[in-house]
Image (cartoon, rainbow, N blue to C red; front, side, top):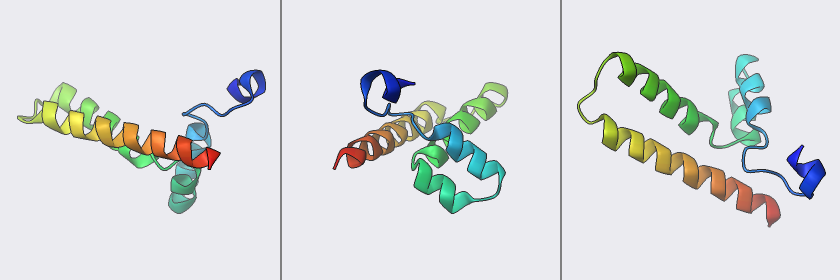
Length: 82
């Protein structure tokens, strides 16, 4: 919808198709569709586990995973325009 309205992709374009490819077992295709998918899955999975089992260095791990996800998302977004 963002592309139709504004003419450019949003930074999250491809995440749903990437998840669909993961459920179909195409892990390489999922990464090619949206490179940040595995970092995001690790981030949300870790947050979910940390909710039930408190992990000692959780804040540092969440920060690193968040920064990694943002860098991958922005790199992929900029790469689309090159």
